[in-house]
Length: 321
Ligand code: NAP
Ligand code: GDD
Image (cartoon, rainbow, N blue to C red; front, side):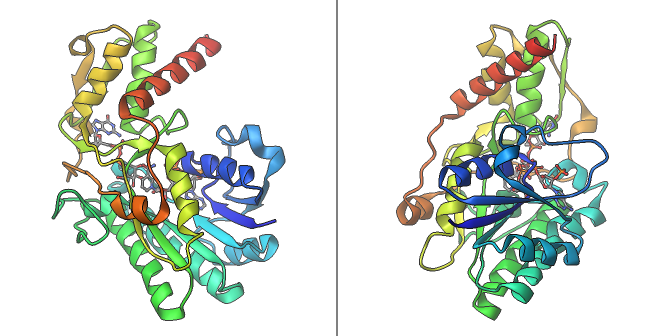
């Protein structure tokens, strides 16, 4: 039985990856930092099938202990301060967690079990003010937020440990991916949850920032399969994972309000406070390498993804009511 350690197991991707690895027969361990209130919502349904290990990406000793305790074949580093907007007011913390945290986990692996296969959650945010359309593995980075700068650090240290020590380390450069488990602060979930609340009479308006930004949005359940595939190859490499389609926030809003039969113009309020100090205007990925080499492809369309998220939010809100 293969063993995997997932950092960030309580997050969106951690929960889908844990489910996927369990379905492949893995023994799954999840690193969980201490929090004052419980946040097991995403993994409640599989808690009896996985083992939780206490630890924090900022605490090297805890990472070394986590690797000793789980003795994994594969480590998936998904933990991060992942909300771009908060990376300006928390630039230093984001640098520690999202950037330096990657060096911590790589050091823990190098010192304990260097033949572990390692996956780093890199991000399309690294392309930032894009230098090429579409973006692929060879496109240079131009990060536009403290989050993206930290991810570039995490990306290159992952490449560096591969080249310096011959370790099996891969970076997946994942474009935005969403699901009903997406945090409420990210724009897709903010919209689907807001639309569901408006439809149910629980909210009167939805405040948003930049409606012109474009993203290549996919489904998280599809993307965690690509993470696993990267670690099953003969040689470690980096891959772009994307749908190859881009949509604006405005299109997202239109699709969501249309689905519940409402006119979005009546409910959307543009709030200057939600504009970012520096924006990433357009992300569009080219997943050709992943399709050719990994045999990976996205399964769910953007429109269906948004509809599924609205259905899920409707159900949750009705259950609460
Ligand atoms: P998420 O839902 O925000 O989950 C982040 C996870 O990291 C949570 O489990 C969180 O734990 C944990 N974490 C944060 N700081 C930590 C620390 N210091 N020590 C240990 N754990 C810590 O993020 P996601 O959407 O699943 O994304 C997973 C990874 O992929 C992140 O690295 C993100 O930056 C990257 N990524 C995401 C996307 C996307 O579109 N979703 C695209 C590209 C890259 P708590 O529950 O305690 O907060
Ligand atoms: N969150 C949010 N809230 N975003 C808004 C809003 C709003 O009210 N209004 C407009 N937007 C715009 C943002 O300015 C941005 O251009 C776009 O919607 C997407 O924002 P997010 O959903 O917060 O995601 P992100 O693209 O900044 O970052 C996500 O994707 C990255 C991969 O490209 C995160 O998951 C990152 O962790 C990930 O690396």
